[in-house]
Amino acid sequence: MADTVFFNVAPDFNLQMFAGQLAEKYRMEGFSVSVAEFNNSVVLTFDKNTGGINMLLGLGLGIKATCTIVNGVLNITFSDAEWTGKIIGLCVGWFICFVPFITAIIGCVKQSQLPKNIGNDAIVIASQQGNQPPAGGPFYGVPVRSLRARSTVPQPGPQGPQGPQDPNNGQF
Image (spheres, one colour):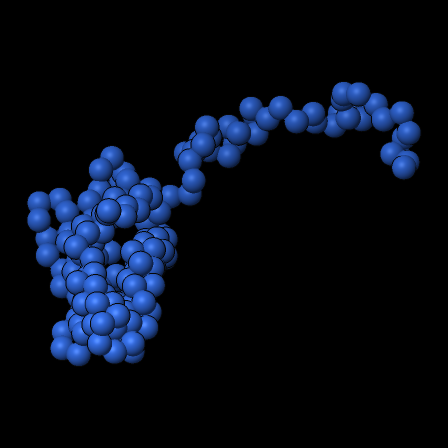
């Protein structure tokens, strides 16, 4: 099953700069990250400790993230997660030695959280660039002056506020 993250971006959003910053963040965390550009999308491959003894123990992390922009929405689809090492670790731990079983379970938990972590970091990076517009709504993009003219809140006049009067005169 592929996890997917969607969020709005500005029309002038720079996908290549975004991918470079996301890749650099995960390189600083010890991941090996490769970035490939195809047409209007960017594919990032994240790998950490995916070879050797880490495969036997199930501690390797790996996933592929495909980033595309469609109609002002950034779509990040995660695929090709590194589950092979976890399966090997669970089998070896079950039949031969219990230590790989425990480390493979830890690896499973970390692997299952990896798409969520990358998605959250992607949202933070995009918002720090100032490329993510605020949440929309009926007045998104309308100047504040015209909103004041549309206000339905009673405005105080010379006689006081309009509308129903409080029978207790504000006393509780």
